[in-house]
Structure formats: C-alpha cells, structure tokens
Length: 436
Picture 1 (cartoon, rainbow, N blue to C red):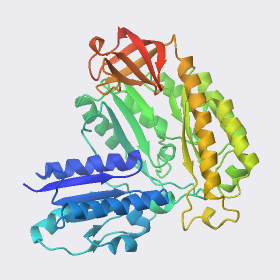
Picture 2: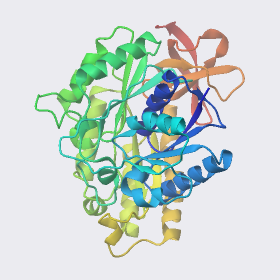
Picture 3: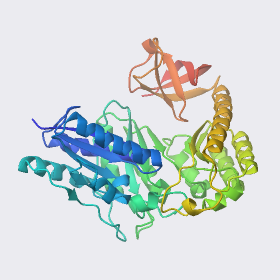
Picture 4: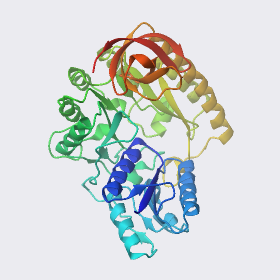
C-alpha cells in the first residue's frame, strides 16, 4: 500500500484544503504515514518566517525518506515558483488554485517510478473558477471548517495575498450547502465559514448572492446547530446583515473583525478602507444586535512610518474596544508590496518592544472580557480536549473556552453552562441544560 503525508502551514483555508487533499489520497487507497512515499507541503507566504518554515518542511521530508516524491503547493510556490523548483528534492510544484491536481500527479509519478520536476504553477485568470475541493470529515474535530471563497481584491500595501491567491473566486451556493449536509450527516454541529476574504463571497457572481445567503441556507439544515464566521472587515458589517444572521438562530456571536492598527495615519498607509471611527461604529452595531458578542482582531506592530504616537493610539484603541482576543504580529517586509518600498522602516527591536507592550494590554482586555462572563449562561459545544484532569471543555458561541465536570457531559454535545469562575485563560461552569 502506498503512503502519504501532508504538512500544512498558514491559515484555516490551507488547513481545509489539506483535509480535502488527504481525503482524495485516502479514497485512492493510500494510507497516511509519517514515513511516506509521498510528501505534500502546503505552504504559506504571509511572512518571511512562513517562507523559512516552508523550506524547512521540504528539507525535513527529504531527510525522512530520500526516495519520496515531494510536492510543494500553495502560496509560497505561487509567488516564488522558481525558487521552490530549484530546492533540492522537490518533484512537483503547484500554486494556490490548482491544488486538486496534486493527487493525480503524485500517483502518476509513483507508477512511472521516475523523479522529474513538474511545474504546474499558472498565472491567475479573470473570473477563474474556484478549484473543486470538498470534505466530508475532519479528523479529531467537532467543528468543521468549510472554504466558501478564495482570493482577495483589497491590495493592502503590506500584503502578498492578492498575488498569492488571485482575485475573488466564490464557490457555488449549491455546492456549499451539499457539503454542509454531508458534514452534518457525519455528526458535525458547527460549521465555520472560511475563505481568504470571506466577506467578498459572491462578488464575482452575476447573481445577487452574498455571504448572508450562505448563512441562511446552511441554517436550514436541521442537524447544523451553529454557524461561525472567520475574519471580516468592518465595512461589510451592516444592521441588515447582523439582524438576518441573528434571525437564523444559529449564528455565533463571535466576530473576528480585522483592525491591523488603531492609528488612522497607519491605516491609511496600509491602504485599509476604513478608519478607527468607522471601526468603533461597527463594533457598537454588533453589540446592539448581539449583546454578549466577543470581538477578536489582528494587529501589526511596527509598520513603516508607525510613530510612537501611532502606537500609543493603537494601545488606547485596543483598551477602548475591549477585545476578547488580539492576535499580534510584528510587521514583516514582503518584497513586491508597496510597504516594502516605504521609507522609515521600523527597527526590529522597536517592533519587538511594541509587540510585547501590546501583548501585556491584550492579557488585561481578554481577562476583563472573561470575567464579564461570570454569572452568564453560555451555550457550549463540548470537545474531548481539556487542559485539566477532571474536566471536558468546548467553545461557547462567543468563542470562549469553557470547562465543565467531565462526568456531566458527552463529546460533541451542546449544553448550556452557567459560568462560575475563570481558570487561567479559560472559563469554568456547571451544566444547567442539555440542548442537543
């Protein structure tokens, strides 16, 4: 029996695609193994560190089995295909939009018993259809990620993603619903809608179809109890959108609302399409509709021309919003972006110092949000994973990790939990009702 292994870097979209590719290999009769005949490296290129990790994974695969076929796919190979092709041991190079070809190419190469470099990285074309990848199962998870779109048209000044992923390309609504039905039949109760720029879903369609249509149609599937969104931009949040979400009675009250900086000066340099005033208005709108909503975000420290005052503005803004979680990144210079050519690049030590300061603030705001949950009843989807011996844990609709006595719940069960206290960076409570 032939064997394969797949290593994944980067975002939830990459993870979804790797799951889909794994299913394709398994259906062909392959077995998953650490010591494999075929290694797939699904790469990321968001930062310089991502590129470095991609190269390290390629080297590690070659050391594990010098005779293995190595296929490198994804964002890093899309933007630097020549570099990847020239790495010793790489046999197959695929980009971001043709990953579904990897199984057939690897299978043919194994049958031919020859190693020859195949480069199938292509430029993006206008109105290009999204690749045909789908899943029916995700190992060791009770929540299922589902990719509904690819690509981005935003062209933020620091970001390579539009070049690595191409323009917006949306999945057919019927295909999305069919996959959600398959996942529900396999026991999944929560679907997480993901994409490179998920709010742009449908922008490439002639029909008037958007993200809210996806949410409403999936909500009609009886066995799906919760629908969660991945990252959104504040401009796409409207009262109508939020109220239609809430009316499904299945939409989670957790919004990952992309920020990147709390300084209007830096936001303009980043080519973000909003300012802090608009962002704050959208947060308030969310809380008007979803009273106990958690707001999470991303912030980049040390963007070119970010002054001490700009950073102070960001810190104050984080404190004012009261995020439940902030993902903090130090600015990474990416060749080919406008930001890489800007003057006044911030010193690396300054980036580290600012990131550390923001991490301290984040701990305070996230703790404050957790403490605000004490006494409330949260709906929790139980998973088998827990950091503590006598509990099981799961995530609430507003994405808080909640622990309960393991003898009171079952895996993949949704229960109502009254929160009693915080433990470390998590919550603890007692089950007051079984929901499903």
